Image (cartoon, rainbow, N blue to C red):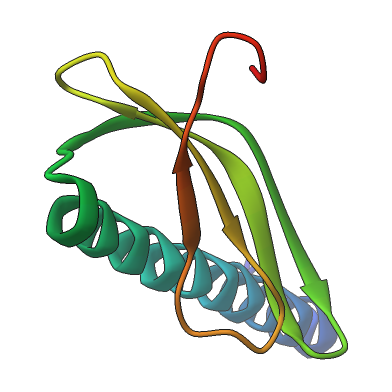
Length: 96
């Protein structure tokens, strides 16, 4: 007996998977940009990120959080919608 799979269910699954792929690609793009900018500006090899907030806004992508370097330094990072570069500043104990 053949198994019947509704065409609509297959179509919705494909759309869902493609949208997930687009979100992953967008995250990869800003993360790669941040890694390069940290290395170039601060000689920081990114170890991990915390307190990350990523939002798609009308002007573009907004990213904010903390970048932790392999050498244990911590930087606040912000990407404003429509901007191409992150604003990076050292995370001082009184501000973190």
